[in-house]
Image 1 (cartoon, rainbow, N blue to C red):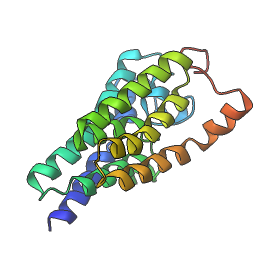
Image 2: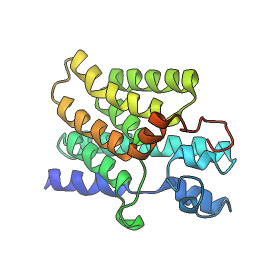
Image 3: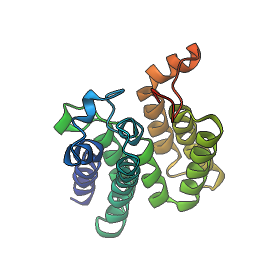
Length: 194
């Protein structure tokens, strides 16, 4: 029963749409009708509420971390199952018609819980590239790609395939961003449309 419980717990935690809930509670409207329509922190930033964006990022990361942490300690060490479920819950939440976020912040929480040095590399790549290029999608995708690479570097081979699969989903969820990057029209964070 423990693997099934980890699956359910992970999905339910991951599927909490903090961006939608926070913007609605703050009177900023339905996040899905703003900017890109995405439910993550970058789109929350487009409401002009930096505090809400920061809270969304932290809570989206926390739910990934919490799912893995609880499953590892109380559900028979099934953190990998909870990790996958939480990520899929964020990207494909049943409450929003399976139209969720792109998984970058949730994946940060997951990798921090699975093996914190992977999470540290992930965060450094994300922050450095965001500071350098100010393109959220590029920083997020490359941070996600860094996860399976650093897992292999740190000899965490039991999570390499999981993190590779999750990184591929992150890239897939960013396919429209990739088209804009190739065309040179992807907005930068802080710009009028970024």
